[in-house]
Length: 369
Image (cartoon, rainbow, N blue to C red; front, side, top):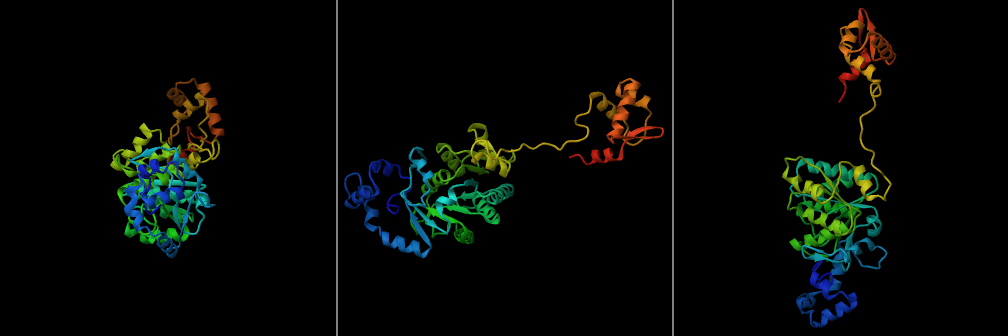
């Protein structure tokens, strides 16, 4: 059936809704009413040949009920349709050594523009490396640009990466990514619902996107124009109830317009670090992000009068307390008391004939970000 039925075919979903795979296959072979449309492919299908070709490529066929089957993909049964595609696959062709179910148990999808910028490529690679180092499997589509950067980043982080393809697992598309696919097959997994030898089509890419979203705990979008296929993956993640994360880009970049749209209009979570992604895909209340803040300084909690006095103290040329008091707008007794407090904190020093900032405080001021 994986050879005969196009991935995510909505007509097949309706036709086979109440049938088991065995019952559907029997009706397909007899060209029963409503099943004629698939007759040309049924006549040419050779399951044994597909299995032999898969074995030659080091691949296997995983179906619902197998120990290796990722049950989370079954969310597609209730996720509706998008771009005339939908539904749970009949099975998945898997090439590589890791166990598919186990590898997807803690996984993140990373998608984005094929014609990405150097910024987007760097961001995807760095995030993927960090996620891999934290034990997350990075899932993408094996395409140019962000996909390839995500796969390479995960491999650099000595983690598992999975490429979900719109062609057979023995087909290198795009051809220039052949070496990358070989590396993924050696240390990770190549996955497709299409049998060996199949070539990609536009609809197959759209069908593939639903698997990327459904098999993972969340989808990160790194650079996407307003008509990018990555937004299709984000839409599937939304329909599957998975979090969508968006990596911001320059406001002048067309490649980031779609990403910013996800944040503004579709409630995507802004992601700027590995910690942001891990928080989004982890159980509620765990791996919480610590928001960035500037390091504390000795002046953070000064009394207002002490702060006013410090602001009035010259940087280099000493000034007498009377001049500091006039500058600060405080009486002389208050300023004298404040100067003693500042001296104890090593913020000012007495240098005849008056007061100036201490060397340590002058140095601190010149090194502020």
